[in-house]
Image (cartoon, rainbow, N blue to C red; front, side, top):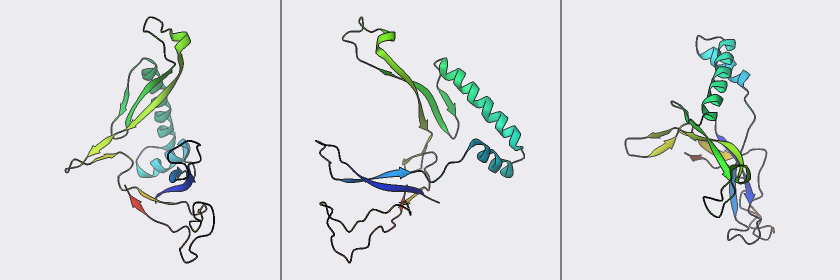
Length: 163
């Protein structure tokens, strides 16, 4: 199993990296709460309905804690908190919540594991592999101008990267 990526080209005018290519993670399907609960049921002694009930209560309890200004930490998972998007005010005295606060959002920070050699790895990424999305290959035979380059060069080869 691996995380898939698609290549995209920066087309922003005025950007110092215009024309450069980058990898962007591409979701390879969706797993619902029901599907997670079904898998979890097979891996432990709880029934699917119990797991659904716990997840539902967790969401409600987290919502209450977050809206009370608390950070929520789930061990071996990560932390959640509410962030604020705001417009600037010229002075602290000029700041008005109704005028300057533009919105709220939830921030998630995965738990970080620190190895014996002090290397930091975010939870969920240990052992993660990266490869190009099979159904989406960029023609790597084209040069910057979009013209065909060396015909002997392989297009869309799969390369792996281990996180």
